[in-house]
Image 1: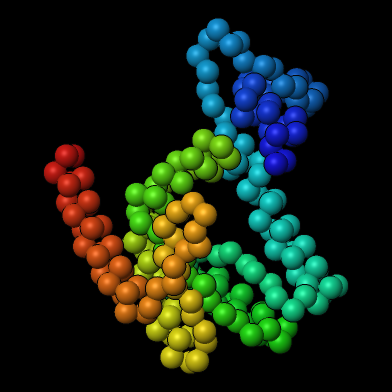
Image 2: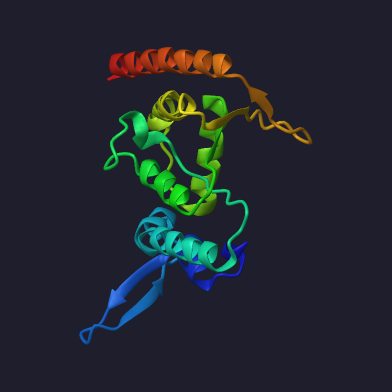
Length: 203
């Protein structure tokens, strides 16, 4: 893992500290006093260092790699969250699908489902390990958005595979039917309403 050998990552995530700028604009790193209050900079590192250039460059490099090697299969993880409304400006997947079609690829969808509790635990673990902030607020939107994508592309003949990721050791996830997935989405919507009502009462 790159984080285990990255001096920059250790500086932000483990050693902690602050950047100080001198009068000539030169920046130097000042380690934080371990006896004082420790401030974890993982979130700042992800948002300010990793995220701005990482995603754009990865996408650019990916298509350069595809053009050079012409792989028969490309597996691309994406989130369905923005696709509650199938508008290109709001749902980047639509343009991505079109791009791969123009490259003569046959687009297939794999929808990975996991219970809210497991997603929440994984998200928190990742937040600690990688600094990517986690929020469960988009969980139900992701379930519903995948349903919307199926209604559009499934009816057009695109292949969809629904997977129930139960996180069981030494066991492959089980495949779900479209009917089973619809039930999961409906239950997720009900749970979301209950959670929001409970939150409103506490506030």
